[in-house]
Length: 175
Image 1 (cartoon, rainbow, N blue to C red):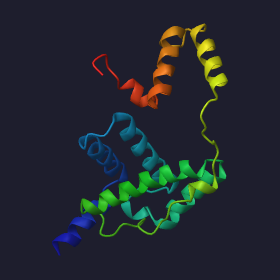
Image 2 (cartoon, one colour; image 1 turned 120 degrees about the vertical axis):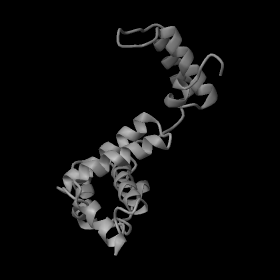
Image 3 (spheres, one colour; image 1 turned 180 degrees about the vertical axis):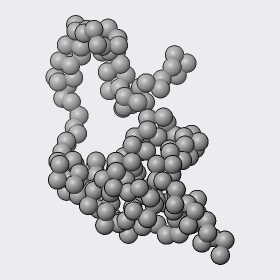
Image 4 (cartoon, rainbow, N blue to C red; image 1 turned 135 degrees about the vertical axis):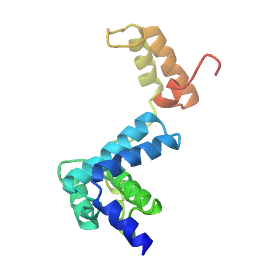
């Protein structure tokens, strides 16, 4: 069978080439370079933890153990889920590209992140915001990319718009 031969050929290729192709495919879809780098690196970390040299070495058991090792080392459930999404995206892509017959991680479930909140986000009080802005305006360190006055203005824009750091970085004078 022609399909069986294709799966056999892909299965004999070292997994590093498949990971590189995965990153290239993410980039070709127009994803942000940071996202591509992080997703490929996290998938690679799980592959390495599984000691996988070939596609057949990536199993649900090995991936779950690798993720559990991250938890044991103190990583949050949100971080573990991010690694899991990366490796599952990799194996899912392998299936859709007809490199794997079946997705070995299809049954692996994500953690319930709500049970492990490490940081509870909240709004700053008006006093906290005023103190932050006053301190920022008067303080510029050499590692800061902007003077204190400009950074304080960025904080004001963030507070006023609700934009996060990445969204603020994407703004241009035309915006």
